[in-house]
Length: 535
Image (cartoon, rainbow, N blue to C red):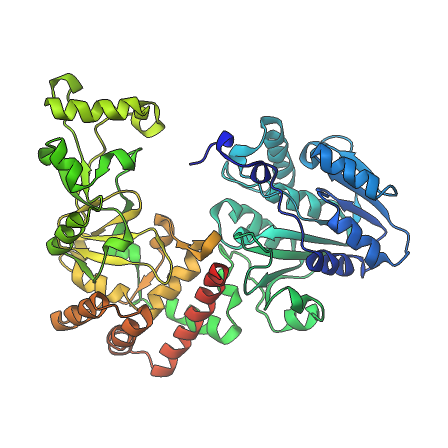
């Protein structure tokens, strides 16, 4: 976790300003319904104010703009003297001077600021905004969320909202309540996504939220890039998109077309297509509180005579080669200087331990490690939690696809991976599970239930892993060894799937080749959206 004093000013201000092409599109669309009274709740450098002037073409507008940054507010006031500019924080003003105010258009690029970076009074104001709208959220929220809720709550009948919002809206847990609220509103909401990066220099994926205070539904639309905004026909785009149904937890799957959704939902309804949680549990690995101190290499083990307390460890997906992690793999990684040993000292006073161990513990104390949260809540601070050994390891994050391996080396893992243990009903079948997880359908499910952040990394938490579907079947040993050999030889994920899919999906699940090809196209679509941000 980063702390407030470690972040740069732009991040603390949430200052990612709006490209002119986006600003012009939002202004044109926002004013097209005849808006007269306009609110810009975080005007920044005035890009959207200038776009409103261009789009209005001399039509009189009554614009209220808010900006919390004093220097930006001074510039905006000088550049746009006809605008009523209020210096302050919109979330606080929502409970004060702007309380109850209504507008025909709310347009903005609200700040992207994590909850822990908000000032206490702003965080309290954010909570009040959400409470009044009856939007459930968590302490992990971001400032953009209450801005969006407040903006929608201020619209006159027929009014419009046009905002730049992080694509986290579609998938993260802290926005679950917001997604439910948007569906319950029953108004027309179009979420416009881009296939690649839309904000130069910003890894964060963004979407454009275009809402109208009239009866309608939520639709997800996708265009290639900013240039496509110029001739975009929103009505035509929405006509070909699936409406997000009530009760949907995450919205990523609705980038698929109607036929693709029908296939996925039909497969999800099959009782023989098990959820991950029916086969195994996925528990976060050992939380040491200081991996750099407790996950060490072989040279450190030898230097401090730590062999009695050094346990075999898996820390990074780069340490994997095949479908199984073996003792030979562990020896290779150790010889290469990888941090593949976890230190678990006895539950005893430091002064009673061997002198080399005391020196190593003292080095951690000199670095201030006992003061770290996970260290200070245990006694003694240097004894890590139970490093039990799982049947398999599944890494929390992946680029091309999730990576799960059978554990043949008796290793545990840090919190970079989940420790996977077979349920009693499937005990002894970890090899089958490792193989059967490696298929296009399961990888597609991971894209649907997981989430991605800057750089296109796919990440899952245990509750999301639990919902991944896996067509478990008995797998011949020769097939396991072949897939293991292919991966060790450097086969790509797609090349390896050409081998595993026929065994798991066609022979095992009884799918037709055309259905497998359709699943591959669906995975390519969702994976492609995620990975486009790497370019």
